[in-house]
Image (cartoon, rainbow, N blue to C red; front, side, top):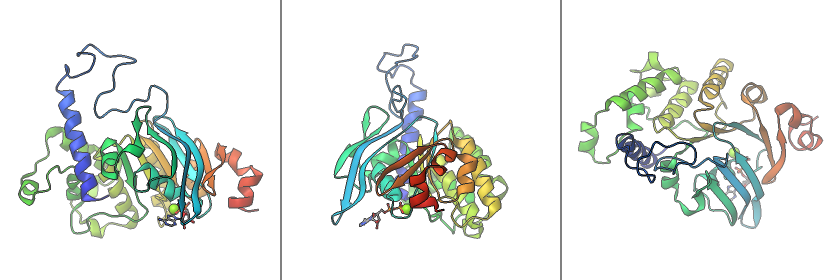
Amino acid sequence: MTPDLMDAGAERIARHHLHLHDPLHTESGGRAAGFGRPVQAGEVDVTHGRILYLEDVSVSFDGFKAINKLSLDIAPGELRCIIGPNGAGKTTMMDIITGKTRPDEGTVFFGSTIDLLRHKEADIAQLGIGRKFQKPTVFEQLTVFENLELALKTDKGVQASMLFKLDSVQSDRLAHVLETIHLAASVSRMAGNLSHGQKQWLEIGMLLMQDPKLLLLDEPVAGMTDEETARTAELFLSLKGQHSLMVVEHDMSFIKTISDIVTVLCDGSVLAQGTLDEVQADERVIEVYLGR
Ligand SMILES: Nc1ncnc2c1ncn2[C@@H]1O[C@H](COP(=O)(O)OP(=O)(O)O)[C@@H](O)[C@H]1O
Ligand SMILES: [Mg+2]
């Protein structure tokens, strides 16, 4: 996560709170809203049952098709696992969803109304898509608390940053995130002194401070101890439902613990999809990935 993306998230939260205090600010003129109500800023229209929708997406690098007619969708609140051999295009798919890489063709929608291909990387973070890269990128010289607080800062100016104070909603969120990521007891520790697993959780916490609707996590348990991996599984299961998650991992026992539907990517497109048992029994998946 970069400071720019953090700023974007903080602005999004600020806008969202404005809405909470302004019940008349709806397209329906403030009527009590139920099913079919207009989508407000900070919301994603999931009335069609999909928070993320990719269709026939392709991208080539120097003539090599890293993503090849990829189609895939994810339901709101779903925890989707993605597996597949190295070079399958898993990270490139995340690059496309987050606006880091532009596909040559295809459709990428967030909810049914937001065309992600029309948005830049920083906008996409602001729209509510948080991404966790493989390597932890926390601020090692700052405490756990300061790292989480920083994820909310709205103003780039040094003076404004120094004067920044959490409001009560933000303080509550920070306390809740600390519990969620199991770092409440380490709130005053320097991030640089945390274990690898704790740093990974802290970075996930920084994403959660921005209340993303969709979280993309690339190999989150790589390098973790077994105990840290088990805790991460618990964490993801607790996030599911409130957030939608796309998790790329090679650790099959971790996948087994957290997965509902598993998508197998190979050569830039979906090779198989189903429960872990189903894809593990699929001859083509065994051939290209799991081995005999
Ligand atoms: N920016 C890029 N330039 C050239 N080739 C790339 C680039 N990004 C990815 N690739 C290639 O695309 C393929 C898919 O890579 P990647 O998405 O990283 O796979 P995975 O994450 O599944 O291991 C690989 O062959 C990789 O070398
Ligand atoms: Mg990768």
